[in-house]
Amino acid sequence: MSDSLTLSPPTLSLGAAQLVVAGCIAKASSMDLPFNISVSDNATHEIAFARMDGSKITSIDVAKGKAFTSAGHRAPTRKFTKYAGVGGPAFGLHTTNSGKFR
Image 1 (cartoon, rainbow, N blue to C red):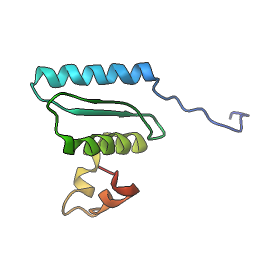
Image 2 (cartoon, rainbow, N blue to C red):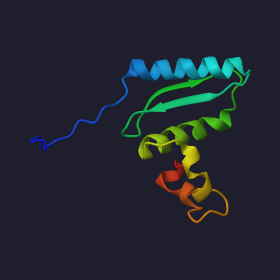
Image 3 (tube, rainbow, N blue to C red):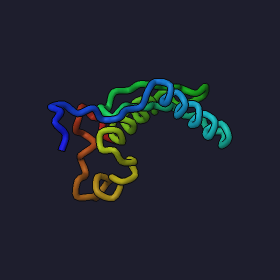
Image 4 (cartoon, rainbow, N blue to C red):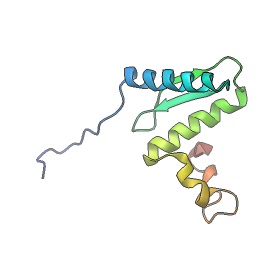
């Protein structure tokens, strides 16, 4: 057991977040699909964002919400589809956290 009274969980650096964004841009470009890309740290704060030319303005908040949800739960957002999607037992969860849960 640690004697420390505080914890310092690992988090992405800005440089690492920018690498994630660059990788996402490369993948989206190879598929000819313009995306909005958001990367959040382990405390759910956005640390990098890119809006590719031609991406939908209406999906900016979706990208940011998915990054928030994934960071906050330390899991991909697809994990919640069965439970929080339409007809799921936790449907409505998307209205929590100021509507940022995606």
